[in-house]
Image (cartoon, rainbow, N blue to C red; front, side):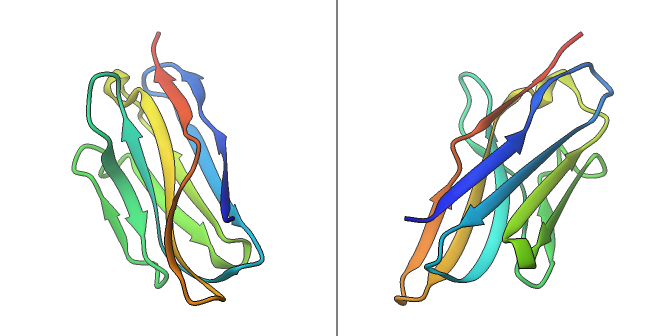
Length: 121
């Protein structure tokens, strides 16, 4: 089974920065398509934060444009999210999401376990 290992997150003051990373690992992975980050705040629905295609095309939620940067390392099957100028409303559990093809011909969409980001003074 494909696993996503997230790291980063934690507590930061408003205006601060945090970095998240998510690595996909399993020998069944043939090709990774879109990689992305979603978040879910208490009492709210999960929403897309940013995603990036295998060709490097990025897409951001309006609320994070200019503050967050998504990138990926295809050799390491890893996606990153650099978060700057953080605001209290960015507080949420952040989930990594990866769409991929396996060597057995299956198309999978896999979620990470989530990492908590808290922006508070």
